[in-house]
Image 1 (cartoon, each protein chain N blue to C red):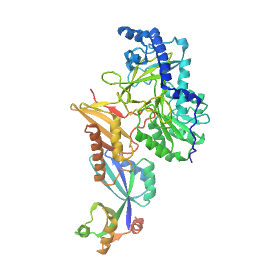
Image 2: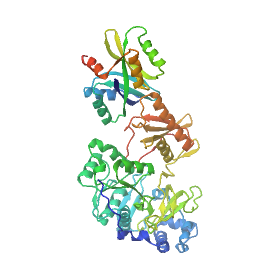
Image 3: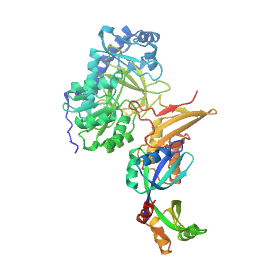
Image 4: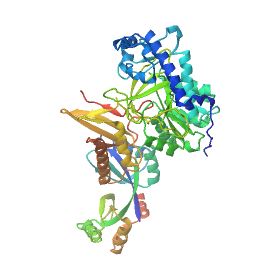
Length: 440
Length: 147
């Protein structure tokens, strides 16, 4: 039996409920300080401001943020390793770095104050989904250079929860610890938790009988269908946490118990949505690229950082009472998108199509190839018990329906290849859905 | 009267057939008969085994998608026209044969065929009315015991 724990207000969550006008004046004050700091200490930012004939004094209102230059991921690479730091090394107490799947990694830095901010937003994240002192949190995000592990760790301790720094991988041990230590919450990527769900019966663990009741899932785009599957198969509540190392790590935004999209901790991170092509700001409710400005990062202020994540902001009041705006679930990234025969395709569209046909989401992988100058898309889909009929005709029909489903949603003809279950790679970090083998 | 068949999804690639077969061999399951249906990119391995429930568990534990289907085993005289006679019966009754294959076991000029009908219960009823010898799984397994 799952214990039902009533939501209770944690004092650390107070800033989540600030009246908007108070929040905005706090934001402006912090923004001005941040721009001043970056201007004084970061050469690249100062140079870009000067090119636009701007000085920090030009930031008089929050709207002025749109006049400031963007920061992009390549800026971090071009200034590798320490070029965007605004603090001397003696004030920097922590460095993290990305894995750098493409070229050089990016490095991010934290002062003591920065770690306090990070701890604060993690505490508020955990509190938002009903965790508190007494909870046992199994942190299966990777510990090390990746921000996920240590980021969640210190915030959890500050909240008074018991942190289990198990890090990622070794599913058998994850399940053993979950059972033996009475884990009540787990932090990991949603695809890794699906892997845990799959492995549990084989290792004799019934997740529904454990005290586990909350999952804090992030570090990769996921969908409502994955949430439903996780909740139905494990009996826990699955919450979406959002963050990125360039801004702070996990804890930029987090869902509350209403599960209606992550609330951005706007007192520390100023969000904008911009048009992908023109870079112009878009009003709340419209979908575009999320741009974030740190409002309290000393070691590495980020001004108008382009996240590549596609979402929309909503200012509709959440039932939880938080005044913080929410972002729509991030199902796609502008750099996950691929172009086939001139059509923009997002893996999330393919996922939706697969789900529609099968009822549950199968494991899948998208492979792009180019044959004789023509792009081909192959979607490999693991056959599930639900769709496996024992005649060739029945399987070919599944194939056809998947094909039609994908084509009608994306406008692109794809080949569906049915593969044996548990043969596609499971990720313990970010799931790599698209394998681009085209030699462009 | 029905006979349980296990079917497995296989990819059409080297080694795909060997894996389940070796798995069953190692656990000392004897395959009474089998058939393979193949399409362009995948195939279906159909198996009849004595301990089908245990075999199913073993295969599923090793990641295979397994489906259990009811088949009908029929005894046919091993001479020209033996099969045609049975097909006459089912066709006249409007019953569709999804697929069929033969049993390796033989006895006194008789062969055993297994059929997948779209409606196995009606098929059994009609075949029995027309005096076709439908063999129960118990009977069949007893016969093969000696092998």
